[in-house]
Image (cartoon, rainbow, N blue to C red; front, side, top):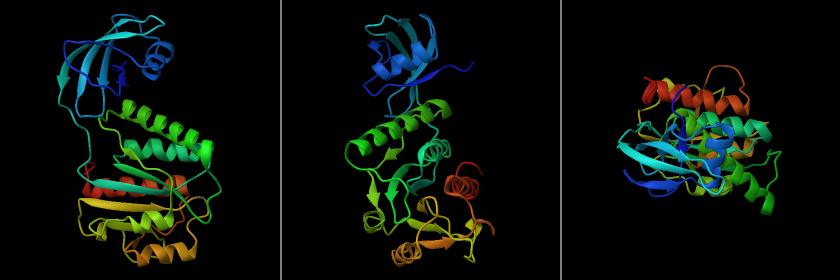
Length: 243
C-alpha cells in the first residue's frame, strides 16, 4: 500500500509535532484506519512534502511527528486554466477530480445560458466547499503538492473580460480546421468548455470575439465530462509533461 498523503493547510517544519485538523484526522483515522506508528506524507500547498509519523489518534486531536522535507514537485510545465460550464452532480465532481490529475492549474466554474445547475447563496457556498474537498482529495491521491486554484463562480461575460491576452484561449469546435497539434506552443492557455448542451451560439461568438480559437478533437461531439479531459490529455501529450 502506498504511503498515505495528507493535505494539512498550516505551517510545517521538520522535527516538530503538530495536530491534524478535523478533515485530515477523519481521513487518516476514520477512513484509512491508520494506527500510531503509521507513516504519512504531509503537504501544505507551499511546495514539497514531508515524511511524517502518526504518533497519537486520540479523538481530541491526532498528533503527527513531522520528518524530512522532500523538495518534490509534480506540476506540469504547461499552465492550464479550465473554464468549465457547471455540470450536474457527479459529472462536475468527475471533471474536477480528473482535471487535477491531468495537471490543470486553475479551475473557473461558469454559469452559462444552458447551465442546468443554478447556484447562489448558501447552496453555492456549500457546493464550492464540496468542490474544494474534491480538489484536495485528488491532490492527495495523484501526488501533487500544490493545490490548483478554484476561482469563485463566474458568468461567461466576467470570465472572458478577465482573460489575459498573453494566454492562448481555446474553444472546442468539431467543425474547426485545426487540431491541438496545429497550435503554436505556448506556456499558458485557457480552455473553455460548456455545460450539458454546450455553449449557446451567441456565447461561442462572444468567446471568439474575446480571442478564443476553435480547436478540433476529431469529428465526434463529446459530452461535457469528456471534452475538457480529452483536451487536457491531448495538450499535455503535445506540450506538457505527458510527452
